[in-house]
Length: 372
Image (cartoon, rainbow, N blue to C red; front, side, top):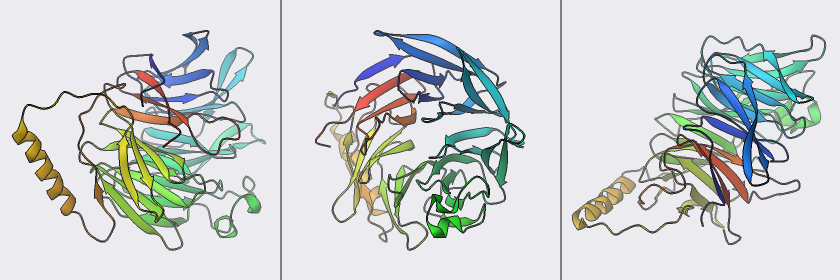
């Protein structure tokens, strides 16, 4: 399939997000600003510029229910933006960080959001009505390096993180007075704030792009060693699988359904992974199909094939590892894809449309075929 729409908004885009009705897109053009564009007819026009941060905005998320935008930056600050009339008004969030904030995500109920940072901590932020401000509780001394991504479990309590120490961890974020005991499973709501549920030592390199499946039964994340990891039943009796990629690593992933995952990264081309009836995950294809001229170097192709086989056989046999076939890069994106965002409609159980942004300054909208 090909991309549905390609929009060149800037020279480089750090991150992006969509409004609840998907009529507006907000992104950081690799600086301290957030630009909001709106579609008028067939043309995108810039309607707002959010200026409050002093350094590059590294994370942004737009809440679906409350229509709030949260931003984090390398300046160690976070702001929650509320739309009042035609203006966006920022509210400072007390993060108490001494290093850059790197990523952010609203919780499913949107009463909290999580911030990963270079200070080896995770900030769980919530609103205090008594003082009319946003405060945070910190999960400290659990990570050995920067927190690169965060992902909320559907029960609104468990939070998964990845770090440049190569580990993926799952924590409880239950906050008395904010969460109710009925908001998740009894085992989750009985855990203390910051209690570590699991630590996954599957990767020996930087880890990125952690995501939960829609049911919360499967956890997936990417390693900088060109691997993607799938873990079933985290916490109780976890079982792990990993798929080796022959080309460049992934930076972010998205669960389209329980058995379908889209991965994006340095290959500049979204990749499709599926699980069969037995639960075995494997690479299926690249989304951006295009014709490639045959290579004139037969020796090069033979060498790549031999190297790929050797690389695949060198993996431990304890998990079901597979090696996907090599493919030239390029297509709709011309540089690393750093962000993937679902475009859900109310009531959708399966994500059919999603958008990607990258270092080439493009926001590309994709639509999955019905046969996938």
